[in-house]
Amino acid sequence: MSYPVSFEIDYLAQRSRLTTFFRYLLAIPHFFFASFYMLAFLVVEIAAWCRLMVTGRWPTGLYEFSSGFLRYITRMTSYLALGVDQYPPFNGADDAGYPVRVQIAPPLDHYSRLKVLFRPLYVILAILIRDLLGIVMFLVSLLSWLAIVVTGRQPASLQAALSFALSYTVRADALLFLITETYPPFPESGAATPLRVA
Image (cartoon, rainbow, N blue to C red; front, side, top):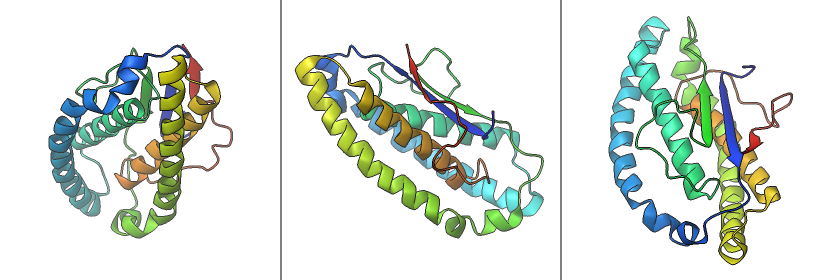
């Protein structure tokens, strides 16, 4: 893995009109679950930040929890943005069978305390790019919704645009969440195409 966080999404042209039409209603249980998961994640992040500042190392359990949260919100975002039809699981476990996969390298032996301390400033550019791609994701999702509801198919070009936005987003989130201290590449030069036809 060239970058410590990789993203892959399967492309399936034929899609469900019904679950697409009611996507946000179907996701209501996840909105509740995500709220509690996020509260726990914030507590873990504060504890991890303190530990990283003192020792320069991630505690294994906290790293795995934060990585799981990153996987979960990526799968949920992909589902809401119509990247996949399959309902996301209520956990952040690594799941090779789900059509959205986020691979995260083990923690480094040592992290820069300076980068940890100034992370809010350090991530500004990545978050700005992430937010701009969020607008792209919204527009692509809207066009995808119309296309799927009318034709029952997801155009490959829209899926590719969504995949690109999601791929950068997950890497920017990893930087923000202290999982990696390596700035995400943009564009992803030399990276494997994160879109795979199922």
